[in-house]
Length: 205
Ligand SMILES: [Ca+2]
Image (cartoon, rainbow, N blue to C red; front, side, top):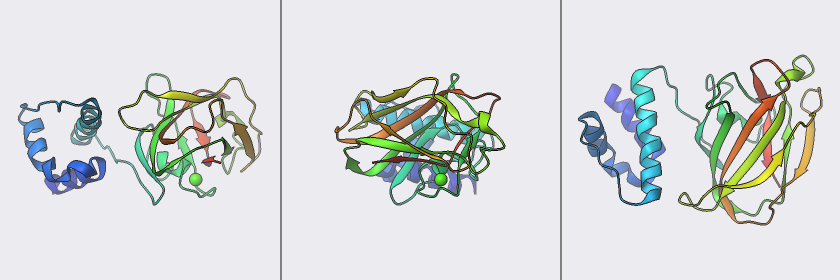
């Protein structure tokens, strides 16, 4: 059963290398794991190894994906209000979490196609009127075209007051528009207060 779940995990996290998944898992588990030579493959490997270790050692639940976006990494408490809910195209679902890594709440994701985003909008949570402090206050969006590329900060907002209203939409321009990009990372470094961030949607335009 465990092997079956791990295989499923391998498949979802490393589609291009599915055939090698079992062999690699054997190497990982037997401590003879070798890093692939290219940087892109190493990054994929590192992500997958990390996921496997988390999965093997905790109640790790993985990430959801959809037709347009796949979540690569991020902070979440559970799938019900997990990372994917930020980009699932549905304002009635939200990313809502107390989990941070290195002091940052974040969602890292890949689009199915390449886009040239010029701006984006954010939609607040369904109960932001009751919990306005969960709004992000300072955030960044990073983008890149290929997995091997360095991240480029395409938007940075500091000390912004998103409305204390349910499902409120605010539009923003990107600092670096018109770039072909497929990978994105949304990072929240500061919220209104407390320990929980929430947003219903991040949408590029
Ligand atoms: Ca949503």
